Structures are given as structure tokens and as C-alpha cells.
Image 1 (cartoon, helix red, strand yellow):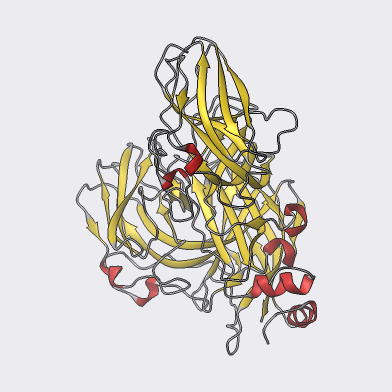
Image 2: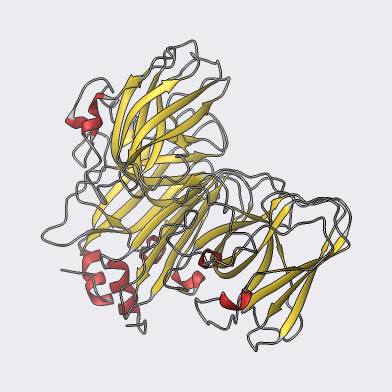
Length: 272
Length: 275
């Protein structure tokens, strides 16, 4: 039943899906960096590394059924899922970001300067606006690359402008930490990111590493300003943010230190 | 339709017309604590960097940016008979400060810092503010720096039409060190003045000594959210925001009230719904 009033919202919350979250602490790069909880043990259980960029795989588009995702149930009929509550505790301060993991791959290496073409480019994102409007492009480290500074360029399809755009990330002269996520600023005039096309390093980092591309849409950011304290966002704070059918809900931490700290909490998702 | 009850608010949040955008902006070199810095031309996602506004001599409709101008946060106009309202604003950055979301209702560039002659906006009367109250009530004038001007102290005078169609002025004391590129300087309105309908001219006394490039930006603030701790954002909901209206065609943009000499990488989530 559509949520149109306090009464229908109350009823929807009464039957909300509830998920307990418990993620172990992970070693992070440090303050002002982002760290993925995708492969971190806990609840939901750790995911696995995404498919290689070099093989076309339907698994490049993770869903609610993918190992590592919150096991949400899709809404019935024409209803939508809505985030009604996010209640989190964290051992260290920082911010927790819940997002829909729309597309991912791994096994890009950083010790060659030839272009690595993504075979799964024929699989554009397929949730929300399928043209990729609002989709963010991130790099995710599965194995640390080398410590030689370089510029990494990702070409991607911008379906809103109809062209190919380029985004660059400056890899510093120290290796990123496994699990680190790096936001990539997309080029001037970019309006969307539908799928990545290729990845090129201008200089070898001297170690292969294992880098992936993750496309995502953010859903909510939970500020955790005090260590060992809870922060709760109710339905007013979450603005009843819509969750797309089959969403692969995942989490990352914006860090204040070299560990993410244990993350515990609950989320509630209602239907209407 | 409007907004009269909590039910209306809930219905609007759950309607298919709700819009969610996260703007990401890279850090900018700022002038320092307590000063404003524009993110209009900062690289980022949703939006990417905007372009330098038209010159004050351009006499163009582009003096009034809208939601389709590159650099504005993506925003789809509400359907006829409804209003867009900001339901949630989250900001998280790596540097402490305050993020301000505003509607950029008018802008220009191209004023020179090395002349004491009055620089008059071409046919300014043709381009009054046209969003919100069209007579400019509540509109704030800022100077925005696209190229640094000189090191000679100067009084910069902005002449403008106020909502009552009187020609009035506001002044800014340019110090003996140049403003940073991207810095925004508020022009305080004279006593009794309630806004700006359109700007008329800029005059420096004396010349700052260097050409530079600065412009006038007229804005209506919509909301702001503090980043009180680095890497720990904040979330402002309906109650804290006051459910402010977002005008149709609004050119949504960001600026930062800085705590230091950089703005810091930041992510700003907006939820806008129709009522």
C-alpha cells in the first residue's frame, strides 16, 4: 500500500524489514580516506572480490542476492522500499555511508601502462535511472598497488551527454590500503556514469595490485561523532529515501583514523 | 498543491517525484577562517565545475543562471501546481566548516580591479532577479573573485536597485592583500534595504593596481549545514531546515564558510520533494 499519510507510514513501519549489522574493524589508510566494508567479516557476511574486468559476467551487476549485500526483500506490486531508520554504533568516530552497489569489477593491475579494456562494458547499470544519472565512480583496492605515483584514467560512458568521458585519479607515492575506496571526480560537463570502458595507468606503480571499479548511488550518510556512542536517524532524517528493487546495499566508512572500528547497528526498511 | 499537514510531507517524500542528489566537490584553496569560498568552479560530480559567468557587458539572459546551466546541482522542476522543497541536507567533508546551499539567481564576471572608473552593467534593467519575489526581497549580493586583483587597499562600491526601485549602494573594503580566487565577499546591505532587484555598477576607489577578474553574484540562501568535525558530517532534516522552498528553475550551488585555508573535499546529499 502506498505511503501517503502518518497512518500508512505507521502501518508500513510496523511490518518493516529489520537488519542487524555487525562488522569487524578493518585496517584503513587513515583520516580523510574511505574504506569499504564489502569484504569485511560480519553481518551481512563478507562479500567476495567482484568478477575480473577481463571477463563478461552478469555478476558485474550485484544485487540483493549477492553475497555481501543486505538480504532485503523486494517490495510487492507497485510499492517501493523506503529507508525508515538507521541506528549505528561505532568504536571510532567517522561517517558510515550506506549505498547501492550498482556495478563492480576487480583485477585491474597497476604495473602496466597499456590500456585495460573492461570486457563487461556491455553491461550498463540497470537500477534507478539506467542512464547513470547520479551514479558515482569509485576505485576499490583489493590488493595494494605499488608505491610509485601515477595517474590512473578511467574512461566511461556518459549516457546523458551521449559521449565517453574520462576521469582521473592521482595515485600517491604510497600504496593504498587493501579495502580502501577512492572517489573519482568525473570530467568537466559529465552528467552521468552508465558503465566504465577502460582503465589506464600512465606510469607503472611497480606492483600489480588488484584494483576494482565500483559504481554506486549513495543512500544515506550516518555521522558518528562520538566513539562508542549510537547515532540514530529516523524516517524524517532519512527522508524515507527510496531503495531500488534488487538494490545491493553495502557500506563504507569515511575514516578518522587507521582503522574503521567495529560497526554495529540496525536498519529498517519499509514498503509502500 | 502546497504543504499543510505531516501527511502531505510523508506523501511528498514517498512520491516518485522525490529527487536525491549527492554533490561531490574537491578541495579549494581558500583565503582563511571566517571567510566564504565558492564551489561554483570547483571540480566535482553532480555538478561538475561551472563556467565563469558572462561578462558584465554581455547583456545576456545567461546573467540569470538556471537549473540547466553547467555547474548547478541537477534539479528537475516540479510539475505545475506543486512546489519543490528541501527535505533533507547532509554534508560530510574532510575539513571543518559550514556548507551553504543557495539559489544563484544572478551572476556576472569581468570587473577590472585596476580602474577607478565606474564599470556599468550593460542594460542591467533588462535583467532583474526573476525567481522568488521578483522585486529581489531577500536577495543577498556577493562579490566573487575569478582572478585575484591587486594589493592596493580600495573601497569597492556596488550600486544597485533595491526592491523599492531606489538606487542604493553597498561597500566592501578590499584589503592590501588580494582575495583568493573563488573567494566570495558579502556586500552588506544598507540600513532599511531588504534585498537586490538588479545590480547597476561597480566602482573602485582607488584602483587596486591589478586587473584581476571579479563578478557580482546575487543569491538566495536555502539552507546550510555544519561540518563540525572533520570526516563526520551532519544531517539536517525537515525540522532543522524548515522545509524550505526550492524555486522552479533554481540554480542550486554551494559555498563554504571556511575554518582554514582550504575548503576540503566534501560530499553534500540533498533530498528534494514536491508538495
